[in-house]
Length: 395
Image 1 (cartoon, rainbow, N blue to C red):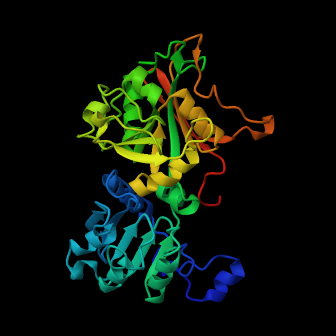
Image 2 (tube, one colour; image 1 turned 180 degrees about the horizontal axis):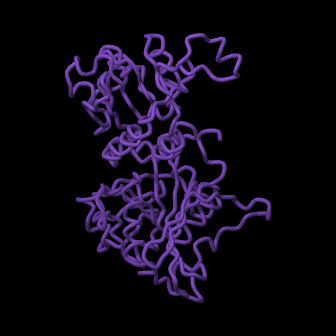
Image 3 (cartoon, one colour; image 1 turned 45 degrees about the vertical axis):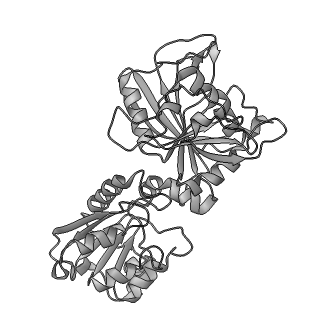
């Protein structure tokens, strides 16, 4: 549908039982999805720098339909994506143009002035948005304001993709905690390590490269103390391009080997230890940030408290990479929103399963996941599942 096809007589739309394309945002042109997809590509450049803000990209077209500017939110507290795009070209190019954004523009003053005011001042005629912003300060208000200024607003053509892209932000706003994903490498018989705890390497290079891409797409990466001791991981992004996530180590006692790869690189990669309120930290770990939380009677820290506190450290999405104790504790707390499994064509036999400490109280309380994707990576298979009740919009 092109703009000239829009019927000016509302009664025609009402008689057909169709939504108003202008007031309810169902007017889309052939290339809209192309430009909105480009917005997500641009937004991804802000990974690791914008949380707790969402990742946002913008594409600006002139009145003739030519791309004249692009922008993305580069860093928390700095100018937003749509303003970056609009200020990178002259007003004569933006006048009467179309602005594409993967998230509803803000309409309140925070670290920066309202983006909606800037859109009106730039003379934009049409705004195309992937999805509304769940933040109560915005949530539909930005769209309403733009329409009141006579700007045509279309929304929702790739909302599911855009919401998943900013799942950390959406989850924080709607559930007041970080999005929690897990990445697990398994053998065919469902083991993540042999009985002595050895797990390097179950999957091949291509699957590990995909795992590093997952790291780069999350604000934080989490392991327990035993994983640090047994595997001595660096927890950095090395096999692909992308920012290093914040490293998060769960150790109620505050103890990890001071000669470990993590302890040796705290000056280069931001690291947080989640510890008991009263734990004493080794002086050699002084560069590590501490998240102190109370332990229960079993000497364990409540996983829900951890996810509720991490957004305050700029971590809206966290990827758990082990071990079985950490994975089981987050599953027992019903906090694993997403699970990615790399299955290798090998048999380990007697060994450790990722959820061996997970104990649902009844058969009916088993968590249910939906398949999101599956991909072959060399000789391995990567499957990703999302909890059925963790979506942000209705089908």
